[in-house]
Figure 1 (cartoon, rainbow, N blue to C red):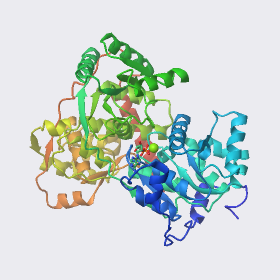
Figure 2 (tube, helix red, strand yellow):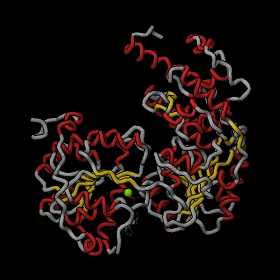
Figure 3 (cartoon, rainbow, N blue to C red):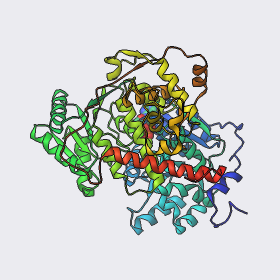
Length: 586
Ligand code: ADP
Ligand code: MG
């Protein structure tokens, strides 16, 4: 039967046959308040830690979604100390594991209470760890996902008394997360082989509904207790600046940092070369800065990270290689020199500012050219990956160009409703722009979406509204639709803004699974029956945001690339539909 023995079974099958690990009505009798004092010296729990810990101690599969700095580690570290056996914690980065193990050891008198097993250990060290495990001295074992897949380890773990499995940074399992690791996809299968009957806790700071459902599905969580905390970071200030000339941008950054005397910050850039160039420019302007990227050797990287943590340097100019698991509470600013590749990345990276709850300024320099660069980077990826990537980028662009409260957009992205009219801590709320009535135009958009059978993405709907005779429109004969050309009097920028705001108000929705096709939502249907006032804010600040850095990319501009991509997507969709419904082939 599946689930037993050393046979390989598919994760899907395993999920279907999995029953809850234990009767959830059986409440445990541990005194967790005494335990947090005893093991960690904390006087109280933070956020939803208590619920997560109780759920796990009761033997339930548990899913913890808390923003960075929320205190996720304790949700498994405390139960690990209390329960019999050793907890196996999967963690994606060797540096993170070492850091966590050092922290746990710091709380305990015994070093062997926590260990890690990964490719950084030699044979003798591995033997020592395994001896401690067999002797029952170790309560927490951090492993890399690859460690679990080795046959010799599988055999070893199968004979070990394990209290539970924890999967940290669980979003790594999803392509829709900001850090996809294919090895995470095999975890369920491995855990099934080691021991199918023990509970699992998954933890992530990624809150998009899509990633959440991927995690539950791929880890095969059984009726998990899901604990979500709010993602609002009230102390973070969000601002977007147009990036027009490189020189001007650098000057503006230098001015900002010089004014932030004695305050630490991170500058994120898209590529390695830029980290070095920018760090040099800052140094030339009397700012203590170093570059950090994955191309530097490990020793140098560790040194520079320490320099930043110890405040020997004020600024670290880095690629996305820097930051995961960095616990520096008083980072005062995070600057994005290039647009990040998703809102999720942006949220995680800006989230490193102000972890102590005090000031944190997040400034993004935005140019259309950077968007084209990101798209260019994806050119050799398979179509499905490009689609995901393109959609994530589009959402980030929408965020950057929007005149709506930044917080509202970020929280909406994470499925959270933010109803406060003015957050008072983002550029758009501090410099409110005039609103224009867009009732009639809102009706036009939704009529177009409906007339197109909810089968086309925003770019296409806009082409129909503005009456563009693109080859696709001609092919589908959409120029004969009554809505065709009804929005000629407004430009693309206007329609994009309006569509984004209709999405934010949940009048329409974007089908993420299906190429970002626009669909009607119930509130939109209601609006169509009885249209009401729909004031929108427009932002023209970014129309010229075209950084001239004389770096020309090969293979044409962004606009052409976008058209090609749209065409490919439509083609594939058409083929898929044709298969389903016997429509004429594309
Ligand atoms: P996350 O993994 O959610 O980003 P961590 O687990 O790294 O967060 O915790 C962030 C910080 O909060 C750490 O410095 C940790 O020691 C601290 N912390 C966690 N729980 C508590 C608590 N109950 N009381 C005080 N500090 C806590
Ligand atoms: Mg963590």
